[in-house]
Every structure is written in structure tokens, then in C-alpha cells.
Image 1 (spheres, rainbow, N blue to C red):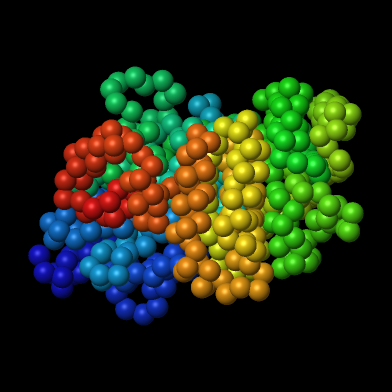
Image 2 (image 1 turned 90 degrees about the vertical axis):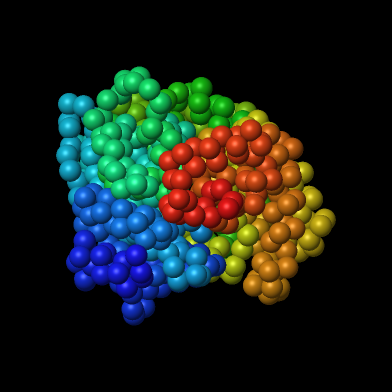
Length: 476
């Protein structure tokens, strides 16, 4: 099939208005961090699963690669076309319907293009909680969240996107539709295809809908901001919180002093607790949340008991408890503004790493010193989900340096140093952002040959033409 014939076929399937070939396609061709820009043969916007299947069949017949795309908020350059001008971007944005809420089964079924915040709000209106929470929740979509197995701030209690998913609807590389959205919590009938698709970044199939877990809304939600003297103190506080609060501990975030200084510099309207001169002396801060089914009075008593114990043990130097939900949202907004503040500061080298919690203090102490020695003046923006061992260990150029030149000249070296340290301490170089195209070479270097062989065998079996998001996750 020639290119004009393919374009005509795609227009016949989804309508001419939903096949974009001209005009400004930046929103589809440029990644969220503005680090890469591709060129699409066309952007196709199907409105139903049947249309997705027909588009996939047409592209398979033509031998044309497809790049599935949700909100295009990924951080690993995994959802934009390459520069060849021969790949079709398959945008799921029009497929945003909430198909069903099953209150008795505690599930919600939505299409892949449903924006995460819309999903959260829909669940809340029905009296339920959907706990997946990300800084990009106002624009990221559930299909992308599942394709990358997104994490966020409540993994400690509820798990990654994979743990929140009970079933999927997927279009295969051959244009067939697998409907696995029954919402069963027990179904041992062969290989777990759902878990295979979640986290596959659109390389094995195209997620078009999902059935997800819902939870009762907590009766009490308490949030505290604590200053700690070291990473060891933060880990000690985590242990105390787990003992005092048990399953009620839903969030435990750590933030370095420099990370918060960027928020103060670029977003002065946000009032960071303990950010006066004395507060600047605290090297780390912790944001912790307790969500519980018991009354607020009892929950607050247990929460305050935790903080009293933390003060007595010396692991907390100062703390403030939000008096209401509005104050709690303000504290979380500060935490979620760190990536935006870092972007305002300039281009940077991002690391999304995970480590055993017990080894994080030693990793930071040793790696901080290593980077300072190897690249004088480098600034570390360290923050993340300490409760589940996930750090965003980011590296900013020296204060007076050229950020773009720093990225060009130092990124490979910084990555080598950091990832070698991650491997030394028994961690993973990708915790929740995925591989995309940005980390393909890193995966080849750090994943075991046996694991890579199994992954290639799965890719070859499910996508023998190699047309689904080529060059992502696996090389070649």
C-alpha cells in the first residue's frame, strides 16, 4: 500500500478531520520535556476500539509503524515519532469515556484516553477513591499510566498502576481485540496477559480500555510536614510511621533542601514550611500522609502520637500538621511543584531510581560525594517516594554554568556514575518512568542477558513485524 493510499484508508476509518498531516503538530511530535522532536507521517485520532483495530490493520498491511500516545507527558521519550516522517502517531485522546462504575464490585471501567484527574473526580462523585496520583494528573491519561506502570505518591499503600488494574481491553499488532475487562480479582486461566501489557509501553499491544480498582473514601486524612537532620533520620521516621499508622500510612515523600530552594525561587507564592533562615539549615524534609477509616479524632490522636515519638527519638527537628484539607493540598502542591521549579531553573539530568529503603542513606552519601568530586559545582535535586524506595535523583548544572552545554557534555558521564552506584547498591535505574527510547542502551547494559532474551522472544511473538512503538524498551 502506498503512502497516499494508506492516508486515504485512515481517513475512511476515522474521518478526515481526525487524520492530521499538516499544520502545527508540536503537541504530538515533541516530548513533554522538550528534549526531542520527531516527524509523523500522520496523527490519527480514533474514536472507538473498532476504529483503533481498523487503523492497526491498515498500518500492518502497509508495513507502517505505529506510535501509541496518551497525554504525551512521559519522561523517557516513549510516545513521539522518530524523525523519519514514516511513523503514524495513534492518539487515544478521543477515547475518554467512563464506561461503567460497578459499586458492588468496587471497579470502574474507562477508556484509555480518560485523563487521570477526570477519573479521580468521577470516582469521588460516586463516593469512591481512585488512589493513583501524579504531578501530571491533569493531563496524563490512564492508558499511558498503565502502559508505563506509573507510580506516584501513594504506591506505599495502594501499589503502582499495575496493582490498581483488574483487566484490560487491548488491540493486538494484528488488529485483533482482546477484551479482558471483566474485573475479576481471581482468574487463573493461563498466562497473565494483563500484567504483560501493563508496563510494555505500547510495544506489545495498544491499551484501549481498563477496569480499575476503587476504594472507599477514607473518613480521615491527615498530612504533616517534618524537618529531619539526615536521610538516616528520614528512614527512621518512616519506620516509626509504619509502626504507629500501619496500613493507614498512604504517603511518605522526602525532599532535599536544594530541591525546595528551587520552589521558593521560582514559585515564591508557595509558602514552604520552615523556609526561614533557621529552616534553611535542615538538609531534608518529609511529607507524610495518613488516611484512615476511623474517626478524625482517633486518627489525629494516633498521628500526633507518632510525631511525639519522632521528636523524642530525635529523628524530627520540627513539624507542622495541616489543619484542614486546603492546607494539606497546599503542602502537596509544594512537593509536586519541584519538577516544574527544576525545569524553570534549566535543563537537567533526571534519574528515576529505586533502591532498598535501608540502603538509600548510604547511596546518597556516597553518590553525592562522588558527583561533587567528579563534576565540581554540580547541584543535586533529590526528592521522591521514600516510602517505596523510589528517588528522583536529578542533577542540575553548576549555578553559573550553561545548562544546555552541561547536558550535552556531562549527561553520559553523570548517568554512568549514578547507574553504576545504583547497581552497586542493588537498585533499579528505572522505577516508574519506563524505558522509552531514552534508556534503551541503559537497559541493554544493566538487564541480564537471560531477561533480555525472554523480552525479545515475547516482542517477536506478539509483534513479528516490529510495528508497535519500534525502538522503545528494546533495541533494534
